[in-house]
Length: 449
Image 1 (cartoon, rainbow, N blue to C red):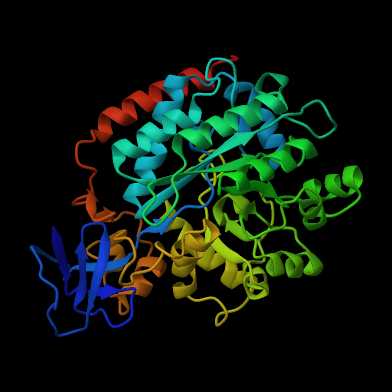
Image 2 (spheres, rainbow, N blue to C red):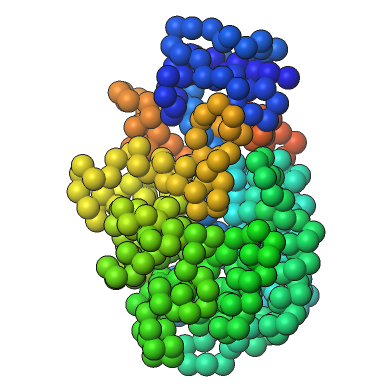
């Protein structure tokens, strides 16, 4: 079935003021202002009250952390004290808790206009064991979301600076066997792929060099990407220098990670030499402004990295360091933070929207079919209304969804299917989900009390 999304109030696309035509999962026509489609259409959706943008793409998250939002033991701390206060609770995560956490994170992202979700799951305590990615795959398919799920990992603990308990660390050989199982079971390739797998050792502190190298080799045999946290804090950089005799980018090169099939979470503390090296290699960066501000980790040099050749995408990061999973709000935070780091001309609202769409698609190796409204690309779209008090008096509708603080999409389409209608997810009882998720969070938050 084909549909004409007709005459939007505004649209983030060139020469498409009359809307777009979707046939099946793809965009087949951009309609200029004042014209009608040349293609046959089966139905029409009047978008006269909507701002239409490409479906946004999240590039860094930890879904399980929705269970410990605004958690008192973790408040007002920097990254490693923060992690140290949370691991004693997280190690009690169960499959039932995981499923509710994933459902909440995915629903929140979807309602914010995100059509491709990503999760970096590195926590496999006894009880949850190796079920996490399987649970996430089931939930993504149930919601009709596009997803990039990573098989995260930690294979060492007990060194100075480590905060992860032994109970969540797994043997290197087991991690690699499980990674291959997940790749063989779920990883899709090609245009329109709905579910993809990447391999994601957690950090250079919690993972051996062997795990980093072997994960890279395994991922490349399967045509999959690689992801990790890198240069998030000055402490991590200092640790790298002390234990490996080099800074972060050189360490990446040593373990075969300096390549364009890699994207990094945070990427804050790279120096000029490293930025040039990362840019030349085409490494992607998931900029996570809210988390970086809450943990006082620093400011990613997003504009310098992008000028050097890196792709810049946006990530909400975990809901224990951001305390929400709203990607539209992250667009606004990125706009504000990067403008503060540069000036009023260097970063615009259009840049922030681009980072959340095409920039994120480039990080995930999907710029050929996602991230922009173009003929032939997947019909992943987010539609926002400007009928709230916060938008009253606006001039530029596209600027308004960033500057005035849009936070909830009215309609969302993934692969040509409406998955959000009138601000709601069809078939989902949000009240029931909140009740169950809150109950699970209370159990986890009192696990060691």
